[in-house]
Length: 98
Image (cartoon, rainbow, N blue to C red; front, side):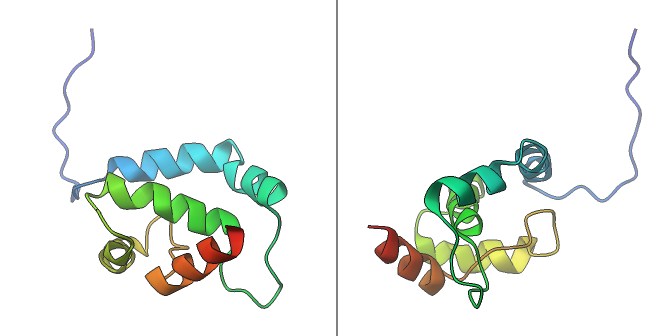
């Protein structure tokens, strides 16, 4: 039988995002997205996969608009999913993909 162990770690809200992004990393989803959508220029700071995965993470942290990515980036940029582009970058990339 499993026992409940009391944890003294600092637990943050939306901590499950680490597990989601870690699983996506192990499944090489970013590489798959970049192969399917194509690579951006070498001078671009963010890949297509970073844009798509940021759009995935935004509603998972209660974001309703692309501009809410600023909050997502400020709070979670030191986590597994550290490649979070600005809202302007996402709009620019999405316009290019249209």
